[in-house]
Length: 586
Image 1 (cartoon, rainbow, N blue to C red):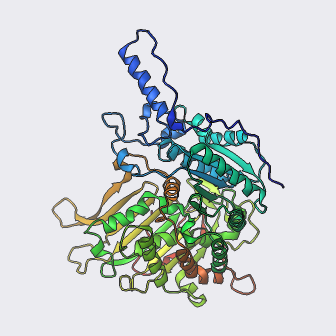
Image 2: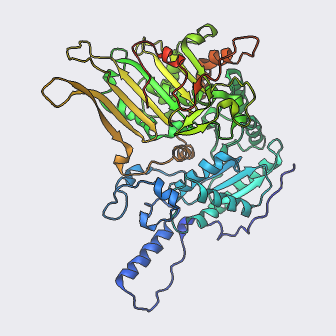
């Protein structure tokens, strides 16, 4: 289909004015009003003028929330001025330059549920500055006004949208534009180029652009090439960055081919491979707790740590994603990206500096040091599973093979547990156990550092191991489990827990996409996996994929299903973790 330009409202100077300018003050009216009414009017007027600039958000009393949003938000105690006292510490010290964000696949599920709410939250909090706009690009024919309606409806319906300030949606609507066409031709990229020209004229700045590929992986290469053909990857008129969603390749070979294709047009410094797990507060806090406190780092090694468990459990089934999941499976969907990133952050050495290159260098070193998993070792270090029928919270749910869109006799795993060993000085002999699966009893992601038992059991009843646990979701926080004497005449020890929860800061956590999008706009690549990280992660799981992708007749057909929905996975996983250890029941 030939790209066509949708009808747009006249692009007058007024329509493209930054949201921070506000309305022209009206002349005072000679009318006697009460002091309280005057103050209230001033507050409302000031609040309306602050949208789009780096100013504190209005207090909760000045927001519109749906019942779902009201239940979701847990604001802390306000300060004397009605503002969150911790909010100033959460703000960025610098804002991005004027820029245009171009979202390919803007009408897709990810954009509707995550990206648009995240961008709106950043803009409403004044973190994007006034000279910012969004160009949605899709293959669906749509006018600007139709896209604006679509985006505003998505924000109103989303559970991810922050409390909406009066007038914000109307002003945000002015930042939205749309273009459509086929991604294999040049027409749609020509239209995107004209949008960047329009933004430059409206904002008086350079043609900075962040291109976000919120599309199926099959379109990554065509879009990257299309932008390159039209010169939109060049940085002579402003910076250009490319954000790519997972999965980055299907296996090692395809990942390398995709990297080669992208690098034909884009420099590695321009490529931002996004993994939303790295935007979660507790993941970042892992480095802060470890390297910012003298009491933890001396114990973070083979002398004191018995093993490490990293769990990413999901209670949901396919939720209509059978087409994708039948192709990907649990290894490609979760293990190769999310869990490998958590593993690398947990096991890395202290970086020489807190910057992108230093941190990513240390993560890559860890991944390189992982003991390879050839075909012959897969049975020793990896367990796969597929859920059958069961019950979740007392409600019966179907097995994987009974889900809509799943082929009869499907061999796609929905659970994986793997044992990784690191050949370096710090971690020699310390196993890292990674597990993830669908239809497990609850949704929870956790990193647990399990320490060795005390060397001498002088107390009756024995001792449990100390555990330092990082809860990534839900109820983000950190806990330390240790033994203490129970009150009474006897010397009886019991486990107690010191618990830190993020709600102690009295502030709602920003969404991972908000953090990562702002980093990409600023140009901070710390939380984005680098090419060599992705390559080494694929190398680690290649043996597992090769062994499990063998077609029936060439290898042993797995005995699926092998765990019931609502349980913690197959029994073989208990054997994997070994005698004297057990998986944490979360």
